[in-house]
Image 1 (cartoon, rainbow, N blue to C red):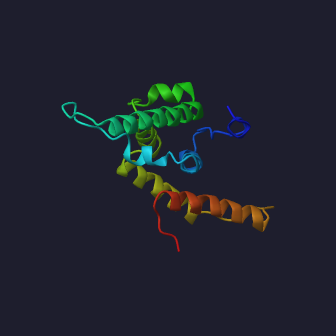
Image 2: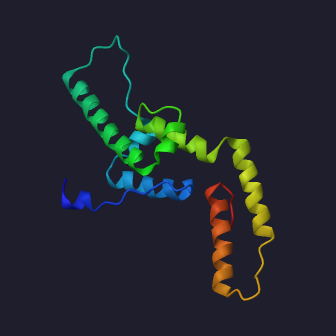
Image 3: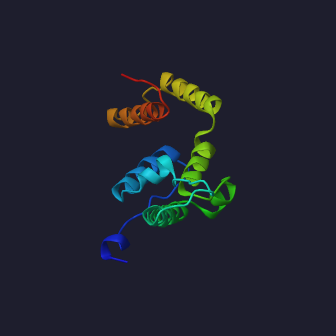
Amino acid sequence: MSEKESSLSIPKLDGDYEHWAMLMENLLRSKEWWELINTGIIQHESSVTLSEAQRTELAEQKLKDFKVKNYLFASIDKTVLKTIVKKDTAKDIWESLKAKYQGNKRVQSAQLQRLRRNFEVLEMKEGDSIADYFSRVMVVANDMRNRGEDMP
């Protein structure tokens, strides 16, 4: 392993999925592996005979997928790993984590409604500095944006 790779810090999923996903996506894009999360490994019919170039490309994709899976496995706790559904490809792992932490549309809507309520009741507390208050407002606002709320 090169010095550059050994100093690389893999983001740990600590429960804040949006933050982790943003950091992990950036890491995978920097390695030029993000496409495996978007599209997955190209699947060929078992009855189709592949050319040598296609077999080589498939082997390279599988190797990259193993590398991405390694990063994903290193970033999540063993207990979380046991709860995700499919672990065959990096795309499967990513989608399982996304479903686990973001939920379906109904769950996302409920989370957004809770954040709207939190935003509405925000107020400065006794002894708060403007910076503290502004920081709390930005945390809620950014969480809302991350869940699809359009906030001009």
